[in-house]
Length: 117
Image (tube, rainbow, N blue to C red):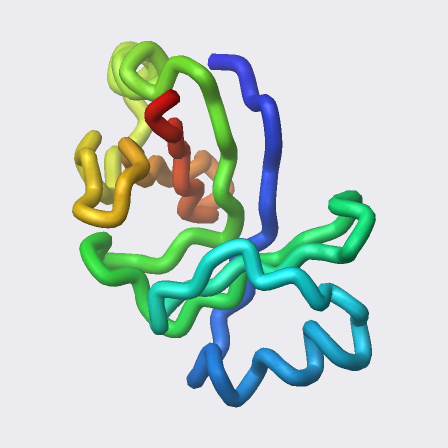
């Protein structure tokens, strides 16, 4: 698998309530997207970002990071071949991305995601 980007996923009780700290104090003022339960905020120069997550809409557990890849199907096959626990199967989500969740050997849940071109 080849990662082309990694974004921290911070668990919050309420995305809207948490927004002000990250957009105001931290200056991540660009809202790239918001689905209510997850939103991504980015600095104006695009060099820093974070996703706030109040509970994943389809996965049984929340992930700690999202790893973007150009070959999510290949990454899924590789994770299976290596015997890693798949927490959420490879799915094309209603909001667009194709993704799966895998548990790292240290216990962290990782969201592996590809976006259609």
